[in-house]
Image 1 (cartoon, rainbow over the protein chains, first blue to last red):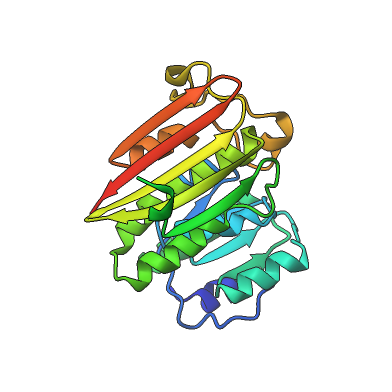
Image 2: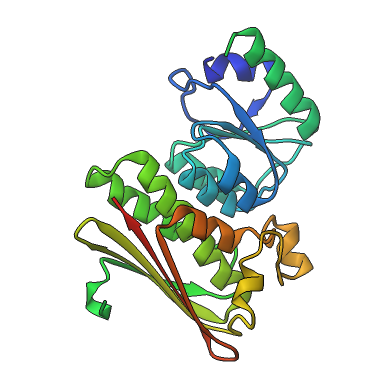
Length: 114
Length: 141
């Protein structure tokens, strides 16, 4: 499912100025332990987390993560957004919790038959 | 392996979490450029990221050296730090000596060394308590 459709449907706010139309998403991963994400997140996933420090970008790069969703209304600093933009990584924020965000994303992807 | 064999070399500063993890990005670009398949690159990056973060979390400072020999990628990380008193214990999933502050950032889950072992073909740890640790990981294409 295209990322722009997902983001629109789930009302996520895009923080990085990058084009979403070419990004296809099959699955997601929720986690705040970086080693767990490194070990278990599928490449190409959407990653839902409440970590907002710059190191999440290294994890995203290592795992070819397509987009990061910061749950619980978390807003990162400008430096993170700037670096993510340079690397073409979509970063969103949502007021909803990681639990609700994961549930809604799961339901949406399921409905789409992914 | 000699110092001059390093294709890419990175200095790592202990405690500097926010400015670390960049070596993975540079190594990723390098391996992508020379046409290495993505699943292989990911293995190298996961292990490298963990190795770098171990230095940041536990040591004073260190260096990370990236080498390619024949069909093998070698990552060597050397640090000046406390060393590992019990390597077998450190290899156990869930065991960590990281501080609370480090854990709050999502590190110190006790998965670093297991992740390094799982993603490399060979993992060698030379460590001396009070002096430092050397980690050598090999990935065969």
